[in-house]
Image (cartoon, rainbow, N blue to C red):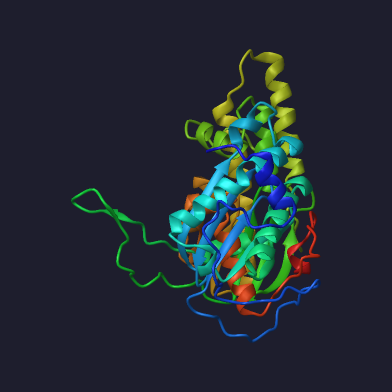
Length: 401
């Protein structure tokens, strides 16, 4: 991937369409941008054949994607910064925002090229507004504003947690090679069934652990959330405690494969009478066990520690999700966010027969722009249009969308 030069960055910050993008031509939706946008209008019917360009820069993934009608993935490009931040044992915000600046334009260009579309064939631009790291969010926001201003496309600010939820609506028809080695797109088959409402949504990521009742599109009731560490944050911290790598989720999952989940009796914080979570006590219990072991052993039983910790997290997440689904009469359960890639969690969710469970494919669990574009489609169909005065919201809760 090439570096972005200073002239290109000036174009973004001055809200001009980058000359390297396919010609905008005449867009499908002609909009004169107000300074202040309008919020969603309930009851608006979806617009078929609408393609949304999604942009995601909330943390350390620079991503762009084109989605049709909220479900069909035409392209989904992600530039990961994992190796860059591994030396710090976590995301270094200043480094993340600088890397976004270097990669944002090439990744958008690649997404349009893979979709075989120009901006003139795009219906709107959706960008993550928050929550996330302020410096990272600003890069994506300013880029989206520049594209919207230069092309006349509507601009949509999307909540990152809502985007994770809509990753469950996504599907793709991957291309195949002909006998001559040329790429051809598969004939479109019917998309898989959509999740059915009401949905019990479990959001589990590096910064969030929430239970949400989703009564319909864009209609949420927050039931509970973590009171301290999120599940993903706990994975990262415990991975460091027992000497595993970064990011902690994959490292603990890999180590757990050779461990005994019953080796250590770590606590489960059920917080009876609420739908909230708490993982700080579990993290502290692991810390105490590690210190005790270090006094008498030269090496830690990392596999057993990882497996026992993972089992404690999964048991609470799954237990509370199923209990909430029963209490609120959910038709199905939807799980989203980076931690939903964990194989132990996926296995526990699919092991029961009480509720159909929707979990996105692994590639759509972590941060990506396809989910942003999908949420953007439903926001666009509901009448949302945001103005160029829109700012990032680093602490934007789903309850205030």
